[in-house]
Image (cartoon, rainbow, N blue to C red):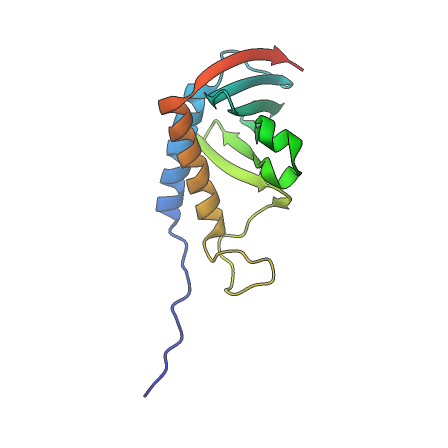
Length: 150
């Protein structure tokens, strides 16, 4: 019997760019008009499940946002219970990409499996799919709370 090596994951760039385009379009539906660095606003799914969005940086072609869960259960517990990530918006290309989740930054297009960091072979794609699911939830069931300047 001949054993074959499992096929290694190959990123599909058109698929990934399409995902980032859809995330950009969805995220723009949630952004307040005239946003600038330091602006914060909340999107609530339920009174107990609220997310805080903060504009970290604005440039002529890019914007970086931070998205964090700020529920009462998360603030009482450890930081592991309050997930957050940073999203980079590329306005010229109309793309939105997750650039940080928890303590991880700069994700590789693919990872060998298994690996010491316990990353999935398509970790970068999976994280951006998580953003897509979150954006769909916010658009369909969320409502905006107060907008404030930090």
